[in-house]
Length: 446
View (cartoon, one colour):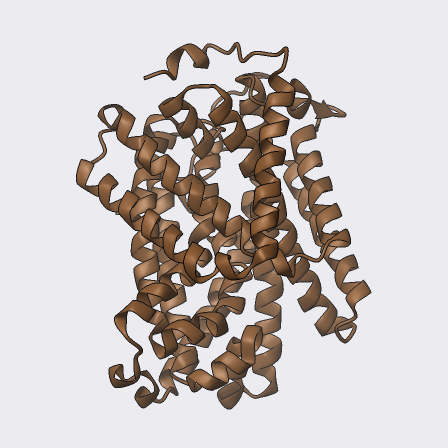
């Protein structure tokens, strides 16, 4: 049974008691990363592929994410460190260039995704307050990045508290929305006779899976858990269960209220439009508030891994030691660099045309980690069958994504290649004359 294991604390190096995260708080960091702008923007796009059977695509995507979650949970229970999923790469392949390139790839891609979410926040805020003014949208995007960076500087405790408030608000409103729309829906709109072929429903998984990508952030909470080997898997499963239930309920409510054509034409406002028949204009504002909280939470969660990632990878020689230093004894340089990158991306660049980059990188990393897990399965105690299923599922989603989405986005392909080249350059540039010398290096070869 999943329980909320509240932990007080053990002594920190300075002698002060350390406040640990609970299972619920760690799970909510993951939920906040997942239930961001994705659910608001995905329904129209998914409807063009899977029609009114989008809820089935979400269900299948939840199964695929659950299989990856099983792999990550087993790895996290065995190797609970601040390095999160990148620690798993090192354990399976060693502390060489591949781990370093993957680390930089993750760092850069995460900055892009976080910036995109911040831009989404800016768009919603501008729409609500200034009438969709583009300049103000960038100002609001920059503001949410600055505010959430400050939250992360204060520490993981405030991050967890902020995420708890945000997730409760988002889940509360989405639950209310789901109940209202499900009670008033038209079952005929969801009749299986109107579903597209099974291959289209499966193709929809490539889109709906994007709404689950944030669960990997939970692996970075290990440093803030009192008993990570027990609590990390619980947080992982709890977060994925919450996200899957919410996504299915919301998609049933939307497609049970609106025709597929109406959902597609409504685009990112489909949830608000679905609320209007019952809630009127108040439904639009309710969903706008939900979107603001959701995107704020996703920005917060996107910045959270920067501290642990920078400190752990600097310790193992994958990142320069500068990344782990603290400005003024408080603010981790890795976090400040990540925030600065997000600010530049959000204010200077048009990110809409490369929205698939984070998904492509995440799918690549997930597929690789699951494959690498097979090499160290004896240490984690993971089921061979479950890992094979996870690998096949992740690979299938990746291939489907490439041939149904990425192939039609030249800008995304060019940007993805540019990020890969940049990551390789950063790794080789840093390691020229510097060599990882942590004791971990001697332990990760298998």
